[in-house]
Length: 146
Image (cartoon, rainbow, N blue to C red):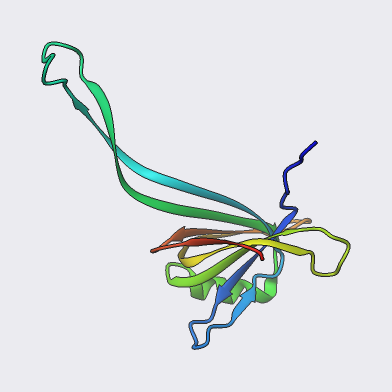
């Protein structure tokens, strides 16, 4: 029996823009939803040999995008960082891990590239939560761990 290698948790890291760039974990954010989408437009083409027949849809790929929603616990220590990053293009890494009994876990792969933080949501309640939304702003990559 063959089972999939599952991600157990994610770390979202924000770059500082320096050279060399240093990525800092967004503490508290430990789950990520990654959506990779092809943007398309449809048009319909008729068969030239059968002009009276119903045309068939043709799909043109116009672009590709990645959207990431990172969720977890709120962290008052990072609110100012989020407010400073909102609306700006910065480099991010979204690392996917598997629990392996160690303090760090086993890195399975990393999504990376420039993203704009489009939203920072904070729920200030008895069990406070935080969420960041990132929209790709250029070419992104996925690198499996060696």
